[in-house]
Length: 447
Image (cartoon, rainbow, N blue to C red; front, side, top):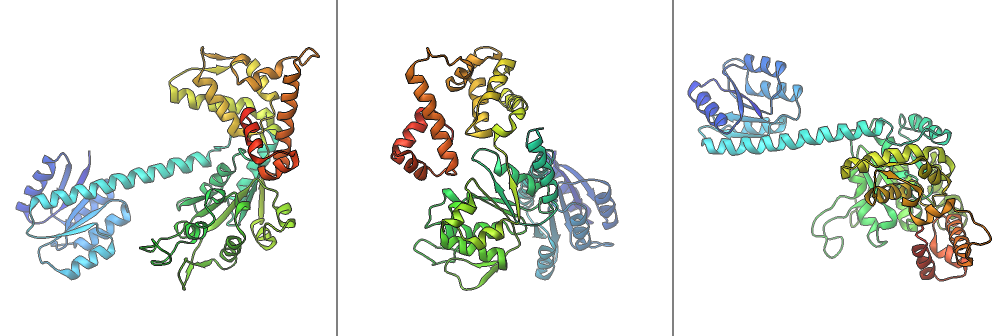
């Protein structure tokens, strides 16, 4: 139930307004003096404060300041019987939610109170959500106990205490975005936003306007100024995923932001200053991209202040049982089931090379639990390309199966060697990009 502190020295108005608010289902504490209001703010929590500006002892402006100090998210509605614009403007500048001039209609007050309480509920929910998210990432949301992942944990603890630029390196599906979120929510910027940008997903002709925003009239359809992702991340963190896919012109502008902490909106002439921490990630070999002239060397060196390399799952296979159990609990809770993986199934998963890394394992666990016929997942219940790993490859195996396995493994290796560049992989394999896509689909490769 929403609780309201009502401060009004006129008894008739205090009683009538209290009755009207209680009739709406609110709990109301009516007081007639400013001193009583100040004590109430110190001793209790309220969803809304309604106070007269002019009181015999302590004025409503002092009550407003006290409320904001005790509980910044609690809205305050000011009442004045003098219709003073100066009082109203001062109250709004100080932080009041709204003001109402006496005499007022009770329905008007009830509507205003309802809006204030609705905003308070949303603000409270947002604060709690941010606390949960921060707690989640601060409490080791990255699952694993292998030597390789413990080294990453140790580095993250150090990195999070700094404000340095971070470059996260690793194959697709290793959890680079999770690493970025963990750094942000363990840092001093955790109460500010983290804005995520997938550079590979943005069309080249829209990248600049998305990152830096635009002014009204900058191009056809720009009917109003729009802030870019860097502005939205002010005070917090911007995560530039797949930064290796940025076009050369945008690379130059990112370099300027790193060096000068400013930029111009598209169509603008004045600089916009921002305070952001940049975390970038890529599955490409940026040193090779620099050698090939596809990535600016000066930008690479500015991004690579603190590199964090996330190991592929095949290099920390001892973490697979822990990951499986964690993912299984998540999907069991979601599906209201109680499915577990047999030791044989876990052993089989540990033998698999996981070209799609943790993301592929997550999909396998979800699929296995969703299609489970009984509470125990056995090797036969795993996807066919994994279930047959334990089969003995004798000379009696069909030639088509041996060829298929060789093709699948070779495609996986080449795509990984090219850093996920399918066009380059197709060129090396001597097939078209379309043919490569068809083979990846046919073999169910998550690369």
